[in-house]
Every structure is written in structure tokens, then in C-alpha cells.
Length: 626
Ligand SMILES: O=P(O)(O)OC[C@H]1O[C@](O)(CO)[C@@H](O)[C@@H]1O
Image (cartoon, rainbow, N blue to C red):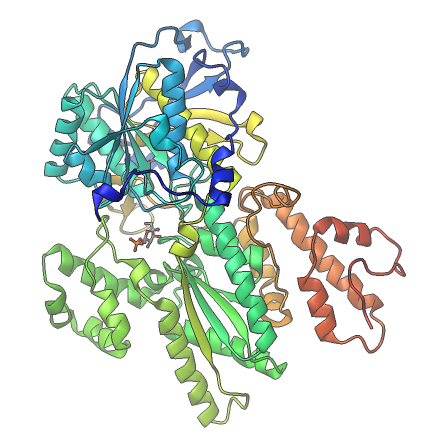
């Protein structure tokens, strides 16, 4: 990457110029300018109480800190004056900000929000961006953020204002370099923008700074498209909303393309890290025929063979209905959830950690792993041994799991054909990986607002002198004026993995913030499973459309369903009821195709609602049946 290309003014298109004019909304507590009430709540331990001792030992300086809320100064409060304060004085401060995670729509607005809040507190405040991500931090490569610098990056996608590199502040050398930079630049605060790994690194840095009496306060901001930094304190991450909306649109386009020609199976893999939040959300939005989540595969311990058979059974069932097209959605983390693949990847990771070269890895695998490795197509073998991610795991974005599955499904379908078990047309597939197509999108209004608010909160955290905290906002499903702003100790989100379950469980590894998996007991997953056979056979495709930033279409989409769960469940129930009702009044001769076309063109749930409450003989809204 050429650092000279970063941070320079961009030539904006008409849409980008309009987007730059969008003014993100702030909740009331942040509208009061500099008069904000800081309220200290309970002391924290950790989200997994069984690890509290280990976390306390690893982070003696930042463990156990209090939860903090930011409120309007006049808010009635039940806490004593010693537990709340309105900071009156704002001497000039110097703050650094760094992108330490993969690009995610909305990241630029964290910087904008930080800048605006700093300038409102004191016009002499200085915000320095580190050019080239964490490597820029180590090398003290800065760009002062000004109105001019920001002007072409407001509400825009990408991370190209500052760029990013290794996403890691972990080795002694890296930590020392970061410390030297913060001391030399006399920083009061360092804001680290990223996901679970970067926020774990932020905690480590905060601990070391506290131990060495370094005055720089370290703050983490939850920004990752994966949506996996989610726990009792964090509802969602910046970028997840946009990425799910864009991917859902892409999937629904693929669905309509598939049904139009009726000849291909589309295998779509979605970027989103180890957890399957993006895949679940997009499946609920677009209703592809099949979706296989990593968490359910891990839970049921499904092998590669079983997954292949499951897909082939779906293909056969559809062929019986004369359908030779379909759409399968998988998360990129699926590969690691398949037990035998997980074990193989672990062996490869261990060899990497022992500095075995990529070329030598195949010959050093254990016999069973070598056998599995040999069975895999050569493109997957090549991808599996690529060098590791910054958290020492496999590079999921580089492993074409959708192509592996398409390859195995085709082989199995050919076998079934030869054996006379499958008599349908030849199986044919097209593969897609949707990653940067969505990741580089202009952020949705939700992500613009969320990121901008988090930037403001970072400044309040630094003004309150807090170290080792994450900026958070809750109540996100409500309008911005009901959002609740807070700061949560990073140590409170940490836990340690265990080897086994139960009393004999042995903790392994150091405490970090782990990605949260899909909760298989959650309502959203239950809906997906309940509708699985309808999705598989009925081509119940849903067209959420592209993001509408303004105008009549802008307010029609909910934020991600996993936050808006209840509203969505209503939506899907209504659609199903609509389908049932349509079926009961179909005139003889109305073809199934027409019915399907009408269902997939439903424009608004309100139309359906109106129809549902009308008498049975009412003419169908929007659609005509022969
Ligand atoms: O584009 P890159 O560098 O391959 O990064 C992709 C990775 O980044 C993430 O978005 C976040 O870690 C993962 O979901 C994905 O595997």
C-alpha cells in the first residue's frame, strides 16, 4: 500500500456528495455540548464468572472497573454525587486514532464523531490519525485530522482515510513501539477501532500503559462487519447493518436470477469471520433455498460428507418438483465448524506457529490429517496452508468453501445418477464469495449514526480519565433520541476458552474477547429452522432491495433483524399467512408460477396487512391472478 494515497481528498460522485451532507443524529446526552453527566455504576467482573480470577490476574490494573453511563446533566439520578459528575473544565487534549481491524462501513464516522466532539470541547484539541493502521502507529506516521481532511470521508465507505495493515498490537516489540509513539506524541488518548482481536489488544495495551504510568488512555470501539463482538454490553458492531443489507440484496438478486433461468445452483459464501451472524441475518432477509450455519454444524458435529449429502438431498427433492435451480448460503466460518476440517486446520495452525514453511506443512501433518488433506481438491489444499491471520487462525476469506461444496455435491450427484438413484437433469453450479462487495459499501444511515455517536463517546471517556474501556450504545432498535451511551471496561468482556465442559474443564490460552457465536436457542434461529422446508421447496424468495439513503424508501427497512427480532417475526408470519390465504382463494387454473411471482414481488408488508384484514373475497392487492 502506498501511504501517500491515503487521506488525500477524494473526488466524490453526486451520490457521495449528497451522502457527505448527511448529518448523523446524536442522542440527547451528546447534544448538550460539553455539559455531560458521567455516572458511575456497579463494579464489573467478567461475562464468564468462572474466569474472573484469571482475568483479574492478567489485567490487575484495568479489571473490576465500574460501568459508566453518559447522561444529560439534568437527568434525575438515584446515585450519590460522588458517583456522578459533570466535567466542567476541558483543558486541551491530544488524541490518536487507528484502524486496527478489517474495513467495515461506518469506520470513517468514528473519526468524524471524535473530531467534532473534541473541537466542541476545546478548539485547541488535536486529533491525530495513524496512517497505515497499526504499522503507522508503531512508526509514528500521523495525519492531523482537520475539517478539510474529513470533508470527503464523511458517511463514506472504506477505511482509506487512514488505511489499515496488520491489525495487531501484541508482541512486546509492537507494544513498546505503540507506547513510545503515545509518549513521544504526548497523547491523552488512543482510540483503537476494530473487532474482537483489536479490542483484546486494546485491553492489553491499556493494562501495560496503566502499569507503566503512561498517561494515554486506551479506548476500544466495536467496528467489524462480522457482528460477532456482541454480548450483554454490546448489541451490534458498526458495519454489520450495512453489510447485511448489501449482501441480502445481492443474494436476493441471485435468487431471482436462479428462478428465471432455472438451471443453476448458486453457492454463496459470505464474509463474516468465524461466527455466522451475517449468514443468519441475510438468510432471514432474502430466504434462499438452503443455509448452513457454522454453529449448527459444530453443534451436530456434521462431517463434510454429511453436509454434502444434506445438500444433495435438497437438490433431489427440488428435482422431484421439476426444479433445477437453487441458492445455498454459507458463512465463511463454516469450514472451521466441520469437526474433521477444524482438526486439520488446528494442525496446520500449530505448524505455522512453529514456523514450519507453507511448502513443508503437508509433509508434517499427522497420518489421518495427511489423508484428509490428500482427499481435498488441490485448490483447497493450497488455501488451507496460507499464512495465518493476526489472531493466528486460518485466513477464512481465502478458503473457497463454496467451491469445495459445489465440487463435492457435483461428484455425489453424478454418483447418485450412475447408481440410478437420481434421475433428474445434470447438476450445475455457480459459486460466489460476497466479501468486499458489501464491505466497501457506503454505510447505511444506521451505521453512520452509530459510528458517529461512538466517536463522541470516546471523547467523553477520555475526558473522564477512563482507561481500558469500550465505547458502547444500547437500545439501538429505538430511534437515536432513545439511545443510551455508556463506557464498559474491556476486561468485563474477556473470558478464557476451556478444553472440556464440566468440572474438569481446563482453561486454555490467555483471556481475550471472544467472538460470540449464534445462539441456537434464539428466536431468529428458530424461525429459520421452522421455515427451512418452505425455503427449500417453495422458492419463497424475498427482495429487500438496495439501501435507500433518503426519500420514501429510506425508512422502510428495519435495522438488522437480530436487533429488530420481534418486528421481523411478525413480518414473516404475515407473509406466510398471506401465502396460505392466497392459496385458499386461488381461482382454478392459476398457475403456481404466477403465485410465486406475486409473492416475490410483495412491495410492502403494509399492503399484505391490509389484505389480510380484508374479507376473503377481496381482490388481491397489487397482483392479478388468471
Ligand atoms: O480481506 P481480508 O484481508 O482477506 O479479510 C477478510 C477477513 O476479515 C474479516 O472481515 C474480519 O476479520 C473476516 O470476516 C474475513 O475473513
